[in-house]
Structure formats: C-alpha cells, structure tokens
Length: 122
Image 1: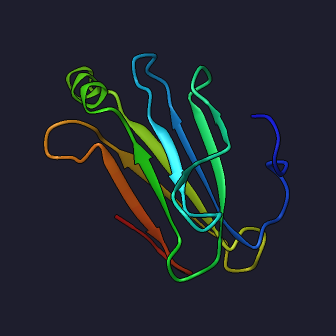
Image 2: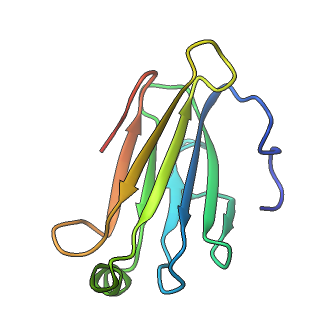
Image 3: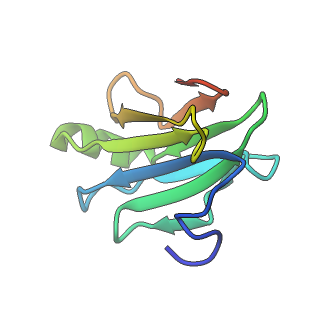
C-alpha cells in the first residue's frame, strides 16, 4: 500500500484491514474516518488488500462495498473476504476481531460494521 501512515505506526483509533484472494472479487473498503463515508485511501485491488485507521468516536464505522453483479458472481464462486479490526492497538487492552464477509444472496452490496471501543458489530 502506498501513502498514509506506516502499517506499524501506533494509532489513536482502530485499524481495519480487508483482504481477499479471489481474482474475480473486487470489494472496496470505505470508512467515515474523515467525517463522511469515503473509500479508504490505501487500497490495492490487484493485491487483494485495503486498509484504514478509524478514529475513536461513537459513530465510527467501516463499510465493505461491492457491485451487486460482482456480489452474485462471488456468491456463486464461494469467494469471501476477511475484515480484521484491531481495537486499542499497542495498548494493554488490544483486541483483534476477524470477521468473514460473505457476498450474494441475503446480503447487501454494502455491509456496514460499527466500531465501538470494545466491539465490531454489523
């Protein structure tokens, strides 16, 4: 990933990373890190990774977005992504949450995950 904060830097928020390996899967990671929902600046679709640091606040979230047609194809292929969120990174109470993200039937093309001090919830 290019630009932005180095991946090993301590942050005052939660680090969210989306990874996927199927070449036909093209999700994007969005967040409200800058106040409004925007795509993460650090994304590399060819490598299957996206990353953002979300500041600690009550309304923090990340979204995994995918084109509806791509979602249907991903479901047929069984392709998934993994959202990993590190809460309280580098602190005594550090917690890592890994969430499988599925696409297709029964799921929205935009899946939002709220990030609170202790939890990540859909």
